[in-house]
Each structure stands twice: as structure tokens, then as C-alpha cells.
Length: 412
Ligand SMILES: [Ca+2]
Ligand SMILES: [Ca+2]
Image (tube, rainbow, N blue to C red):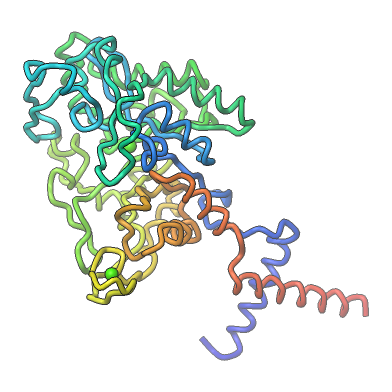
């Protein structure tokens, strides 16, 4: 770049910004549609209240989340309930209320699992359970208080709270393990797509069949979303997982976190990472409205052995932040929104000691939404990211000066 083109470029940018950014005075978001990103209460406000309870979702709403996120599994009698997995052991008191004879061994995504499975309990039995906080370092004082909610109850909460607060509270349901659920549905004499069809019918009844519904349906599988694309105009999001992130910032795709499980069953060799190449994003765009990648796909961080936060230990927080991997920009190029997961105050802050600063970084880069267990931190990050940074502010002032100078010359 020559020494004269830089100031010219900056002046042009500043003038454009002065026209476009003022008088609103707000930051220009790098999101797909230019609107402010959304804060998604991951499993509610699960950093504070046992996950997937009405109390957890209500806390998220109270903290300012735009969307609440129920993960969905099926009961034996075909109800959709909010749990992170078909296994009830970790997040409820099921083992205190039902004998070991109610456990069974099943294959979930190719992994043999012995546990209390939601699809072997009726809704009436599930309603006798109470939620517990599965993360030992989080508040355990609310254990035993809250029921396991149905999808109907979650929709009702979102609608009631939308009316009470005057804000639109969206829902972001996730179809968990569709391949597993399909097997259970067929074994119970239901259709192969009972899970997806029941979700869509409830959403259409509550919100209508429209892409403008305050709803995103998400899944780590792909065939179920492709099927849903033919059933509904409600927005769909392809989640993108990985097993881990390596020291050099590259993704570790060890099974079963290597690809959508329906790809594994179908012999489709494409990995999760393949879905985020320009070709993969073009494929996803044929059936979905967005992608929901694990955050290390979006921002490269490297373990270079430097104790950046100076606590004498090397953790993921110390990693060097190398910036965007280009996937946010490529997804936007493909017309897809990007919702990154999961932001937590108490773990997984790759490259960031401060969880709010971490979310601010992603929001400024241009993600269209963030999943967080701590919606209050997400809301604070959104407010902070909405304030122009000093350099941007200086450019805007510079733009004003240019506009004023041009205006004076014209008048002169
Ligand atoms: Ca989820
Ligand atoms: Ca450290």
C-alpha cells in the first residue's frame, strides 16, 4: 500500500461511515443482515440455575436473553421434553426415585450407553423427577426444586414473558440425536419422522409457518434439517461440532465428534469441518438459514506456552488469539447466519481470561448470535460491543470533519 492511498482509504471509509453511521451514533454490526446479534440463553441461564428448567429459562429472560434454548428428547409416550440428552442420570434425581432395574443399555451415536433413558419413562414418571445442577462448581442449592418441562411449557413461558416484558422472547429448540430417536420412534410403532413432525406441528400452531417466527430449529445432524426444510419455513441452523482444538489451533475431529451422525450411518465421508468450507457452506445453504459452529472454528487461538494472564498456570485462557479463521465471512458470503457456541464464565475461554471480553471479540467480528450459559454476561458484552471503539470513533469524527469541509467548499 502506498503512503498516499492509506489516508485516502481512511477518509473514504470515514466519509461513508459519517453518512451511514451517524446520526444513529451506533456501531455498524458485521452481521449477515447488519442488525444487532442475538444473545441465546444456552439451556436457559444454566450457569446459575439447573439447566432446561422453566426457572432457568425465566432467569435467562430476566437477564435479557433474546432467545431461550430448549434441547429436546422424547418420552416413552411420545412427548417432547427439554433435556440435553436422552440420558436422565446427570441432570435429574432419577437414580434416587427409580431402581436400577429401570436402566437399560442402548447405542447412542455408536456408543454403548447404560443409563436411565427418557424414552423408557412416561411423561407422568418424568414429572416426578426434579432437576439437579450437573456441574459441581456451580450453585447446588437449587437442586431438587424444579420439574422437567415439556416443549409446550417452554413455548408458553416464552409467549407469556414476551407479553409481560414487551420484548419478543424467541425459542431455539434443538433436535437431539435424531438418528437415535428415529430408532426409538419406529420401535414404539411411530413414524420415522415423528420427532421432527411433532416439533413442527407444535411450532406452526404457536407461531405459524413463517420464516419470521422468533424461532430457530437446530441440530448436529443434517438429514433431519434437510427433511424439515421441506416441511417448514421456520429458520433452520446446522450445528457444527468437533472433538477438541489442537495446540496449533487446528480442529481435532476424533469420532464420534467428527461428522453428523447420520453421515456416519449413511457412509457420507464429509466431516463437520467440511461443512464450513465454501463448498460445504454452499451445501448447508441449500437447506438451512445458519450455521452454529463450536467457537474455535471461528477464531484461531494457539497454545504458544505464554502465561498471558500471569497466574502461573498454562490454561486455554492463555492461548494467543490469531483472529478470524475466515469462516464467519465465508458463511455470510453463502447467505448463512453464524451462531457460535458456547460461551461460559467458568470454562472454555480460549484465548481470553475475561469472558465478557471474549464475547465482545466475537460480536465485533460479526457473529449473528452467541450461545451462553451466562446471558447477563452476553447482554453486557453486546452493550459494550455496540459502543464504537476509539479508533472507529475517531474515524467518524474525521468523517464529520471531511463532510463539513466538503460542505464549506460547496457553499464557498
Ligand atoms: Ca443445545
Ligand atoms: Ca495462565
